[in-house]
Length: 239
Image 1 (spheres, rainbow, N blue to C red):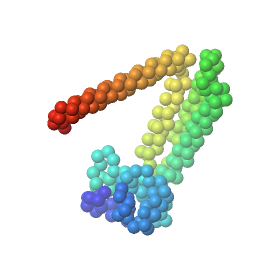
Image 2 (image 1 turned 90 degrees about the horizontal axis):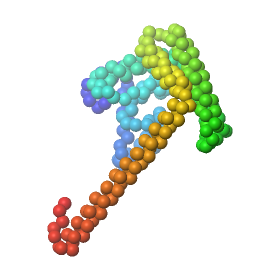
Image 3 (image 1 turned 90 degrees about the vertical axis):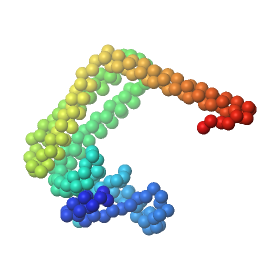
């Protein structure tokens, strides 16, 4: 971001503001530290470097990061496009994104509530099977709701500038639907086999972790014996 190729290209379209957040906070003034905390909180900065595109009122349009081996000039061009399509995507796509999030949140909350009410750790196989089948039904219902949302997004008229973003969102919903439909078709017997395979896998992972820990402990003990022997015989300790 500090390279001239990026700065020279980006300043054609943006007013660039660099906010430093050094690991050594002592190099900042008290005002600087307070401002950093406020900016990090207000703009929900979760990692560095983060680029925020703001409008003239300071409202966020989009967020981006220089990832994927992008060149400095290429990143500036990406920001230019993001600034253009961001408001359009927010207006036309965000309502559908919020609808998708609401559908999934409510569905999973309902599933969790029913599992808790019926006893998620029940040892009775008949009860477990009934709970599994109810969960499968709810998973299928969620898939149908998302499928309807996908059709609604596909049919929605949106500006050509966000055709790529629209297609990506439709594909994302389609992937969710495929996964949910596949999951909802799993039988109780198949689920038991998967659960048993996972149990064996976890047990093997636990045993492997114990073997590695034991091997490390034996190495440490051998090093300690060697050190003790060197001290006892007044030999030079190899490093």
